[in-house]
Image: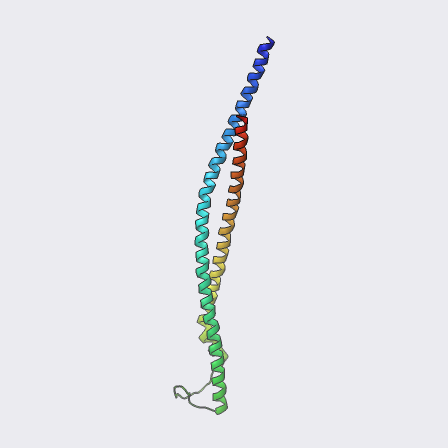
Length: 169
């Protein structure tokens, strides 16, 4: 009877070990499925991040171009026109030295700022697009980094759990 009781205890332990093994095996299967899903999401996020980087670079190039044009126009218009107005005022010129038309009013800085206004608007639009592209790029990169970190941790856990399961067998 004591031999049977010992074997029953051994069978109970074996049954418990088998159930533990099955539970760990199921957890490993679930973890593998999660890793597979995360790898697919990572690929999608990586593609999205690359697209956002390309959009950012394009927006940055457009902004730099618009900013450079604005600065060039500001300097050119302001310096040239101020000098011309000054000379014409000093000489009491009545006719334009370039085209010969009669000049009634030499104008002021406000009038000349109207010339630059459309270029300023383009620069402002390009800056806003750049800011949006920068934020979207950073958001995409952050999402990718977060998921990639989680994926790495899950892969480490899978390796550890697999080694543990192999040692139990």
